[in-house]
Image 1 (cartoon, rainbow, N blue to C red):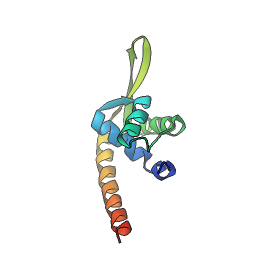
Image 2 (cartoon, one colour):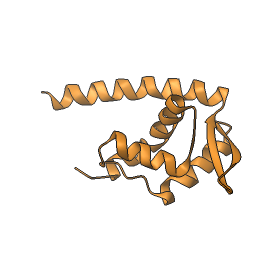
Image 3 (cartoon, one colour):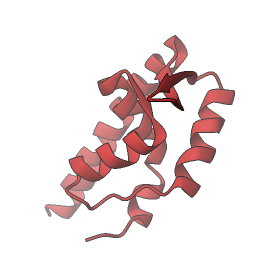
Length: 107
């Protein structure tokens, strides 16, 4: 399939779900995990990922911490309490949306 435009509107949901599952991740790790989970179908670009991470951080949905790993600084992102609530609500909405799409396409 490889049509990333279909994923574009759900990128925030994807990021929040990854963070809910993995607890904390750095940006490149998110791109690789999404690619791995979708068997290469979803390739998040840095141009789409980082502006959204900065927006989510500004909105208090995620927070970040910098850790030094092998002499390099790495910025890890984590859900805040507000982010955990939002992720759960968005996941419920997404499940309903997917159920409705499946109903339509299985006609």
